Length: 331
Image (cartoon, rainbow, N blue to C red; front, side, top):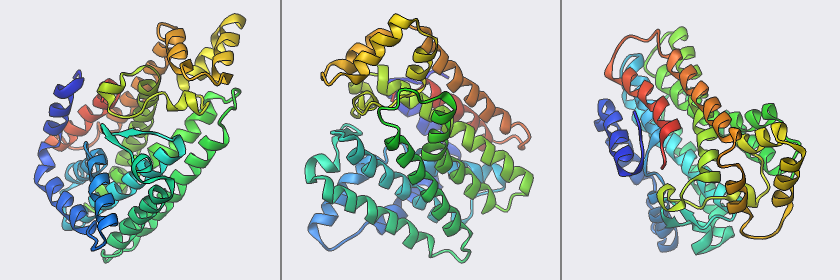
């Protein structure tokens, strides 16, 4: 599958077809959870509602459930929970990155300031755990709580390594494993576990989710470097502005000539605003872009391989195609 522009969005909706009714149920639960009689907070909730455009994580949870035995009522709640956690991380990320655009809309921090944005993220986390506590089993609350801890660890590691131009590929992968792959893995884990799947199936879907999350983040980092902001719909070049190394830059610094390394390091250390465009121009046609794409595709292939022992079903097919979508998307 080749995804790009509006056709990619339509195709993604088609992938959700096996769980479309369940996804709509979860969307309604999410909307019902975010109701407040205070105008300011209600306006904030309405605004961040624009940030869950693709609903990728709820869809992954529901598709994993369908592929592992069937969607149950608990899954509707869990799908809303993981989306609340995800939106909270986006709001906090935008503060950390000083981003102005998210899903083609102004970020919370741009419109209301960093203080309100941090509190909005905190509120969303609180809503996630409030909703999760409505389930009879506490397994999900414990897993979501641990996942939130892991995500925050990854974010803190990323911030701590700003300006560390010696960051290794292994260290980078550890960071994105925590900040991105952990939540995607949890979505698939919860889907399988609450569908009553056996341990082998749970392990397969966890492996699928983890590999998918890594592929997704590497592709996202590539978009941040060489993507088109008008197509992607969010502020790009933030990694460069924050002097955060991602996989293509790590590879370029590792394999480039002494002159190429010095040129890139000079741009990374520069305080001139256009340096993001200059860095993109410097490495756009280099083997480092191809290398990062290849690594993303390797993780995508690993994700698809983890599904091979699951019984054939439309949901399994959608999960497999999703693994390709995340590395071919432009949005």
